Amino acid sequence: LWALSATGYGLSGVFLGKFRNQLSTVRKAQAVSAGPGRICWRIVPGRGEDPAIIEREILSRCREVFGSALEATAELDDGIPTAPSGKFEAVKRGAAQGPGQ
Image 1 (cartoon, rainbow, N blue to C red):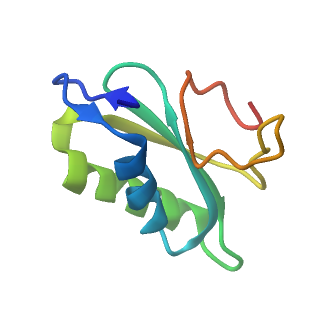
Image 2 (image 1 turned 120 degrees about the vertical axis):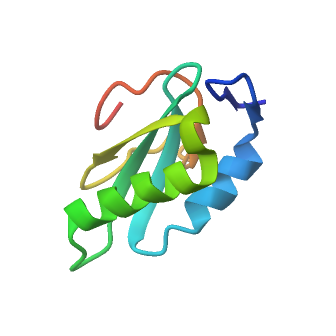
């Protein structure tokens, strides 16, 4: 399991990756485990998209899908770095440390 919801329900990386793929108005998105029951979505908005609207939509969708079992936050950025291997990590373990971390 990749992350635990606040109620102890396990969330797999595959499930979170599928959720991330539904975000059609973003160029890039990364789900980062921010501790038990917490997730941070790092988002690179699509061209011409209003970042505030994207953030509201993502957090609203999280509430619809996960309810109170998962506290979600969103960070909007111009880019999300790749892993040292050069691969993009769409789903990442470890506490969110802010843009570029």
